[in-house]
Length: 404
Image (cartoon, rainbow, N blue to C red; front, side, top):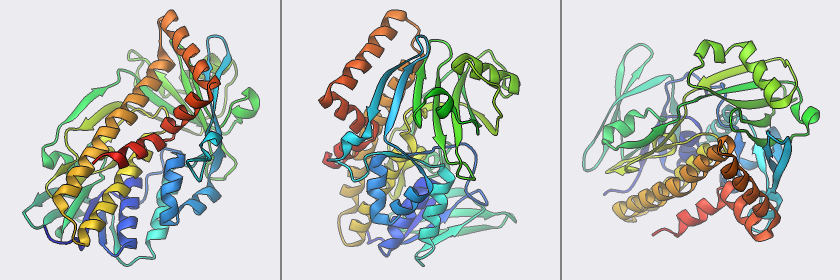
């Protein structure tokens, strides 16, 4: 295959934007296409793991991220049944393996805006929006995207490679014929935010997971638009509860009363969605490569989805840069598929599923043993470090880099 001069990227969300920035900084033209007129500002990912902050240093993004976000060194697992803290995990133990032994809580759209602002300095970074990728083709020596703009006009763009970062319903993935095997959880998640300082009232850390066999909740604090802080709560909705019911003030405040024995609280945002666990059967088909949610989706418990997507994008960008310098494309892109697909299954899928099951376990004996195991991990320095390395996706990055 020829050297890389121009890469097309479907999707300018967090993973697409970071991938494009990495390529443009290294002299490869990146043309991005996104359906939205601006980055989505609804409730999406908000956790930037230590592994991501380390990788962002190379892109010059970390300092600006730190300026905007809330720093969280600790996260708690709690038992709502007994109203007690089961374990408190300390990212500070990562100080010997990470330059950023903490999480930054920052809304996804702010990370995207920060990335796009940095990318504007590079003429090789080109973003078209709002436009829709409607068809994708490839030959032995190039790829083509048919892109439709708001007026209905369709323009064909040609490049050397195409990166699909266009989400769980990716048209790019569907074009490759790759499977997207997995399942959808029976319950929906309702993400609710309130300006009430739940940490101050209830003693929460900035990130908390509160288990209960019937009504678990995860909570985190994000800066909000004024920087004063919003508490974002994820409540599961039962299958028999209607959408209208779950989105109502009455339902939401009932959850606050159940989970915190308090409220009602003012509700600033609410967003309900279905939750999937799926991984593409292949992350690469010829000159078309998948990254982020186009390649894998998971439940949000643990803050792993967006961060693993950043690892995808940066891993892929580095390989495309090597190809541009004459390295063998097939061997590098096949390795990308092995690296990122395997670790998506072993780390993101396995850990996010385990996190959710721990939160909702109904069998009293199983639940007690799992919470006791968390206590044992918390108390053992070596296991504690291993746990936070996995939670921060540092272990995932290390494993990915080892795969040949």
